[in-house]
Image (cartoon, rainbow, N blue to C red; front, side, top):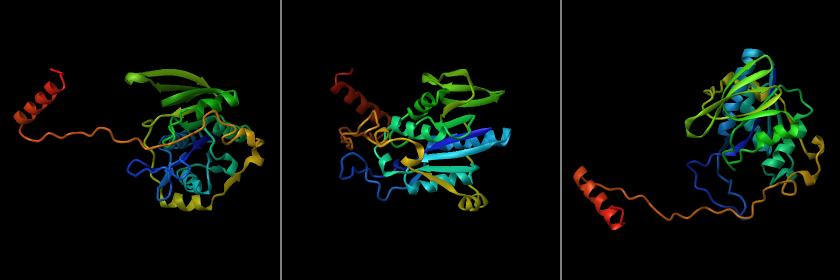
Length: 262
């Protein structure tokens, strides 16, 4: 079985102080640590587990700068067999739709039975790349996948819905599945895996190699254009009440009365 995993090289911003850069349309990336997108990490692990069970190959693909090689090396160290980096200055400012076009133009010439992506991008919050990629390729897809069972060209998948509910559906191969966190437990990278990954080739392709024009990518080929980014101002702060349970209860009652809630 040939599996393709679409991964993204993203900054870790959970504990970082975010600043807007000089353009006003992006964050300042200097000093930020980059790693594989969290949701893509689970997609990669699921791809490797499927390969270990059924045989075949896993190819990791990313759209990003040269620095994204560190994420691809991590994929190779974790069990991917091949890696492709799609890099071109004209890819900059591409939204989810343009990214899906870039991926589709590359993947359509590759052998594949299954394409896995993360359900969400941790940097821009896009969830549309997977479904759009499936539509462009003309194949089936399912999103927010929490469980995958493969059997004779059909996947039985559990999809996460709102309110803690799950939906069970059957999807025929070839297909695109966008994976939710918690579907598995991603493995640690071994020292031997890192050494082997450093020896493997990362194939690099640009705009001229995938058959698209400048109007298909970047801001010109996107549905969404960022006009301005800003860090929201802090308007309210939490107030911590100290004292005995009786004292805290009295303060809470006083606050509620002052606001006309009781």
